[in-house]
Image (cartoon, rainbow, N blue to C red; front, side, top):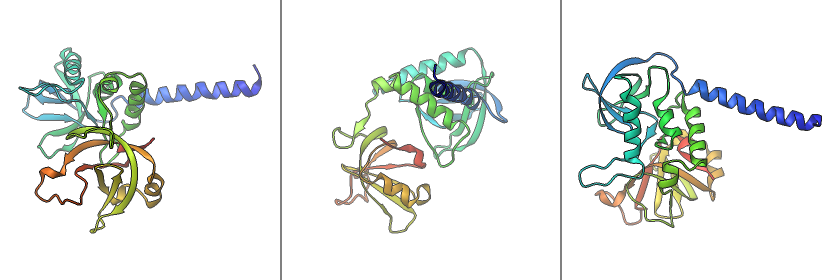
Length: 259
């Protein structure tokens, strides 16, 4: 083998090894955690504890399970079953609590007693979407790598969940992954928010601190993918006819990806 080719191959394998080591260490429990007993599994990303607290897994979202007359979202029941199977072997787990959501639920990163990331497991199997909050967490890079591989392999949600096109598909409320062309960006009158306007019935709002002017400029006219909870503004009393009917709020620039 020629030296130049050998160096390229060596560099490739070193990069792969380094990436694998990063994933192996970053996905596992880092730092202090609380040992808790779980009592009841509500769905693929929510559990009740023996002490009465309800815990929502931070950093992921699993599709909804079937409930009463509402059918399950694609892979929702599978995510629930996988979590139940994973936890049945042990009545306890570790939690790294980061706060509470607006429903009063505890937000935490969950781990098995051997340090395995439950979030990472669900993402790797294509049973959960990675979601992004205001602050990056120490596991974010690893989860992104796991999601990329699951998506490339078309596992779970990446086979059965429909990624919507802003203009091509009928939009609907709830968590969605959407693709479309970004036509314009502008600040709100208060100057606190930035609005991202798509070439369809969607507008996205985020805090002005999340992106620089150059970052936003680079996205104008580009096809992007965005993920988060979609809201029908027509269901609210303050909706105006000149506004785009669909709104998504994002809390991290990582929720938006240029395609």
